[in-house]
Image (cartoon, rainbow, N blue to C red):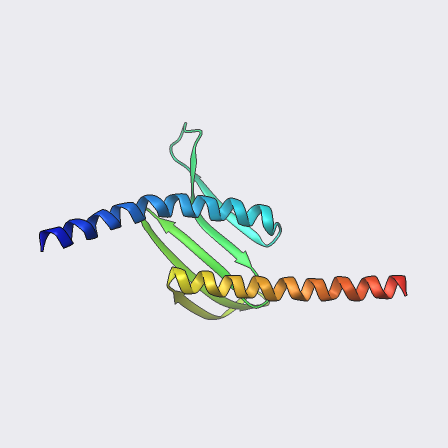
Length: 126
């Protein structure tokens, strides 16, 4: 019993450390890969500190807004359906489901933009 407990608590400690790095890496990747669609809120670690940490990441797609909030060691992920600034639907999701849905919506957005680019190119060149 104590071995299972120790293993479980070790995994929890590791996950907490990994999550901080994951959130930082996710924010950097999204800011670089989809600029204009991502908002990252950072907070200084102290009044005179030069370092900061991420409090939230918001990714806007055509279909949904994806919100990740980090509060201490806890991470919450939400998908909202927003139309003209009004939230019509708010879903708390597990991190894995949130990521899968985000990837799917980014793929849809990419396909839509590729189609628009191809149509514009054909119109201008043809």
